[in-house]
Length: 237
Image (cartoon, rainbow, N blue to C red):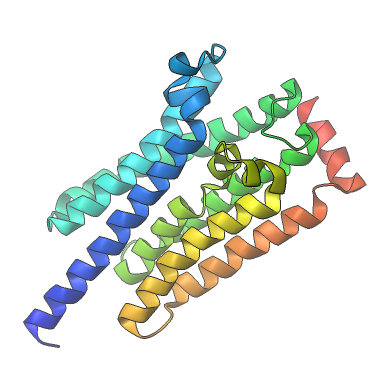
């Protein structure tokens, strides 16, 4: 491969991850603007300390991913690796606070539409999905082609909760199938871009997409079952 071709491919990779991060951040903002980011402008009720902590951790994760992408774009691999420890701490905070917030919200009856106990499977599934993708990304941290794709999926595959809260009538009417489909559209756009540019589907994207879609289908299948409702009831007690 020539030096010019290598530079073009590198720029293409940076563009994908930068725009993927910005798209995810935009969706998170759109979904939670009324209840978190701009809540004072919308007269939203005060938030608990737990919700503030969860919102801060989630926001920090998406901003941190963008920061890490830009470090690589600037060829500061040393700083990128050093900051990785901080990223692992943020990810752990996301897992713990996200789980606590989801269960507490269901207990209090807070939901963007579906009944709270049914909806609980959505955020808990996202948290589990996030844990699997980030763990895999950290495991492959020395194999950059796998690492960066898995970390991108940990962001763009985690926006379904925000999608559910975007104030558009067709999303509110469509429920989980609709906001899952919109999440998949973002995920598949990133994968398609990468696949076309490299003329092959990378295994990290192939297995990652399969995991994301499978988790969505599974959640749709179990959300209204007696077994899940029994588990959800136990969780909120």
